[in-house]
Image 1 (cartoon, rainbow, N blue to C red):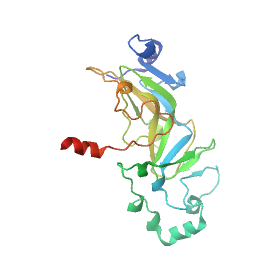
Image 2 (cartoon, rainbow, N blue to C red; image 1 turned 45 degrees about the horizontal axis):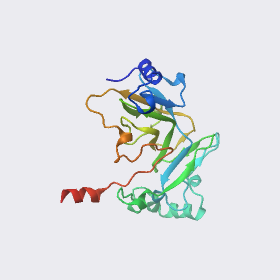
Image 3 (tube, rainbow, N blue to C red; image 1 turned 90 degrees about the vertical axis):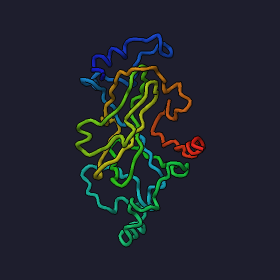
Length: 239
């Protein structure tokens, strides 16, 4: 059963002696009452992004600083002019479908990242690149199931703010990492509303995320790259 906005506020204000430090079931920092909706709270985009370095062709920019009124072209994606000429002659070398840019979820080399800062005036994202972003808000959730989703206006600009990982866990503490993808070259701004968080009640015994030694992302701050998927461990258990 999903919590309403007034119930979210009540859970934020009421200490629970069963939680660590008698904390409330819901913590959202920073908090602005104007961002509370009927059954969710609006989340905002932090000013840091990461991309997987392997996915960026040589000579290309991962994003473009936005200047309102300027007319852009494909040339603006390239910091190296010779790479731009190479792209014009051999576009397949820069096609994101080219296996040379593959990611291996079980290899740490695939998870090396390049940092990007979103300037105050905005940043143009590329539809050919996946970006790891983060929420401004730090949240803690106890005795509830949190999850995030896009806002209607974000979706209608064809911005995907979580590729698969919109589901959180009872006991998760940290900022939310966002897996951002755009359909067209699209401007994003720091502190823009990027999604909303919901809370649901659940039944059954608890297994809090913050007490689970197998959890990878508790306490994360800023955009956090993927943990290596332990395929070898699975194979060993199957023997």
